[in-house]
Image (cartoon, rainbow, N blue to C red; front, side, top):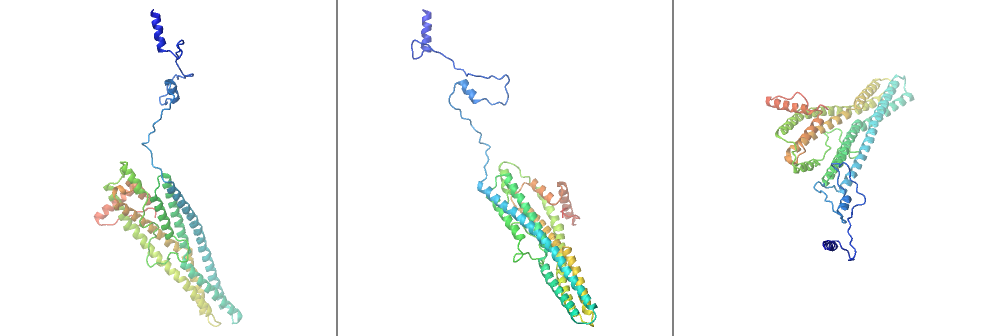
Amino acid sequence: MSSLKISSLLSNSFCSTSPSTIKSSLHLPKKLHIPLSVTPNLKPSRKLFQELNGFSHTIPVLQDNSTTTSTPSKATIIQLYAILEAVADRVEMHHNIGDQRDNWNTLLLNSVNMLTLSASAMVGLAASIGGGGAPLLALKLSSMLLFSASTGMLVVMNKIQPSQLAEEQRNATRLFKQLQSHIETTIAIGNPTEEDVKDAMERVLALDKAYPLPLLGAMLEKFPKKFEPAVWWPSAPKGINSRKYQEEKQEGKNNGWNKGLEMELRNVLEVVKEKDMKDYERLGNLVLKVNKSLAIAGPLLTGIAAVGSACVTEGSSWGAIVAVIGGALATTVNAFEHGGQVGMVSEMYRNCGGFFKQLENSIQDTMEEDEDQRENGELFEMKLALKLGRSLSQLRDLARKSAYSRVEGTTTDEFASKLF
């Protein structure tokens, strides 16, 4: 009787559609691999989990979106790459034109000196020939033509200053390469914005204006009334620094500024203005005056020699003396001016003056901004030290010397820059 009750209970619990048959089964995975050792960081397999639990639906995996970063606009990156290609093309153009204008300086100097020396030799030969006639007239006319051609070439050469033109193109090549590296760094760091595109465009146009390629109509004035440093940066530069350090500020990071650093930068700027900028302005004005005097003296001497060669007669030697001495002096002046590349030295001082002017503007603009809008203070200090060719400790020592000298009413005995 008890066995019948047990069988009836089992049949009620495990019965199928057929009342006469009882079916019960336990489903297990066909192949179950149980590892002997468990790896600590091994994630459980979803398939194994489903097989063990008999699940047939998919379990969604939640993804952590808390660390997602904003991707830059594709159009912005394309624009930056377009500007980068234009900058690379300008680097090549300025390099090639710089080589060409350096060749101008060498070829024109050699040609003018050969013309002047040949004319002087002809005048001397004409004076040494006894009697008149066709030989004397031929030598006189030849020397006059050579002196006149030399004078005309010198006027053009001194007007354009080929050595200075070559130095302009060398500086432009260096600055465009610097801009190229800046744009590449901006793209590599990531998240460029429209502000970066605008800044790159302004820098390209400012460099184009500071170092023009054509000669006619756009050439820089080679003999200004007063020495002026070169300016190759936009009047109101806007870079990526403020945006990046605003992001750091939002993340709760300190941007490295304090009162001591601000005082240090002001002291360094005082040394730059009182020593470096004044010295380069003095030297620039001196070289400018020397170059202007030489540019006037060369054509003037060859012109006097041409007049002297025309006055060579049979019985008088004064014309020949004036022509020969004028030609010799003109050759010496030209060799000193263009062989010594005085125009290049003038442009070098102009570029160095622009470097210190840009440094002054950079420090002043940074100090005028709000603290949370500035570039990181420690990074700015490191960049300044590298630009001046100093270590951080040397830069701070210079700032202390500047502060002490200002308190004592004296001037600092060293320049801020160790590069120039």
